Length: 420
Ligand code: XMP
Image 1 (cartoon, helix red, strand yellow):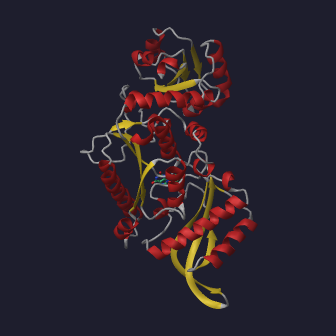
Image 2 (cartoon, rainbow, N blue to C red):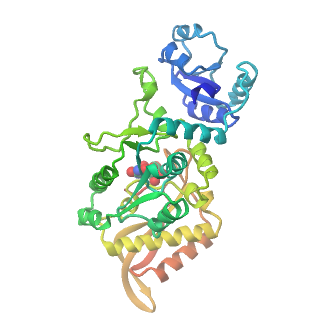
Image 3 (tube, protein in one colour):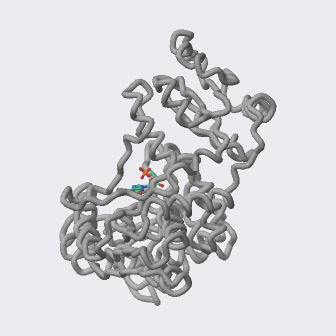
């Protein structure tokens, strides 16, 4: 694929906005790669770039001694040192001095990725863990287009999914795409292990460990030698130390999800060079529905970290029902895409109320709605009172066991987005 790409390399001298830069230039159909300034000139040469952009900040200037080694590459070079205002200048540089033609398009990416996958896998088998999230879903669609029945997707239902989620994933992948989908309902196994566990870290550990065991067992049964992974470019960039071993740029990231050592899969990571929005664009071109591609981010441990206290089947059902109402009303009111995440949380406290004219003593549901750019900080969304009122009324009348709904008004920090 590299041969046909016009690549501009961004040398990172500690610029905090570098991912934003790389992404913005790609929006103009110019392929960018980010490398730490410690990279060797030879490593840069391997990518056959048509230009270099030196990205520094006021606090981290591009030191001349660090720049010296790149002079031998004899490439057009632009130095940027103050944030997003310079993107336009960078784009002009790519077109005018690097002579880029602007051919980085997702349609071309798909064609080339398919050829790459076929070349790597040959007639081998690939197994992929499908979570219903954007990255693994797009990788599933891409692999399927490339190798069809040589792919088996494994979808583990750990019992902590949202209402109707297992059905939705099966419908999209097994029925519409006709993929080999191995669906494992391991709800009982997970919920039994989680019985009585209240500590959030403990819950996360149990869910993670069981997940790996169930997945590894299913994966080894497929006889696959390759493991598909939804690694994306930010995963890789964030694992490269700026001052560390320059070889790190090739790939230090290998998030194989902690699979046991004896399962020696070769990795297939077809979207590892893409940013999230590009992954979505590929998914759209491959025919994945918006209900899957444009969903709010969802944590790995799923409703497990939105159900405070020990998880019981009946209280988990309360959370699933309440969460479904929140999402449904949010979509109906056209607020879903205006928020980063909006969801319900189950609180294991009972309060006194009046339901159907009678004294009740039931649980509390909290609603949280936030906006964020990168999930590092988040602001609370002031959802219309009328919408919150509808959610509250529906939750109380339709979900048995709840008689009070509260709204979380805590920004991040000090609160985290998830409650656990
Ligand atoms: P917090 O709660 O740390 O969440 O403010 C930040 C973002 O990350 C999501 N999140 C997770 N995502 N696995 C994930 O893939 C996890 O264990 C996990 N925990 C939190 C959270 O939903 C928010 O978008």
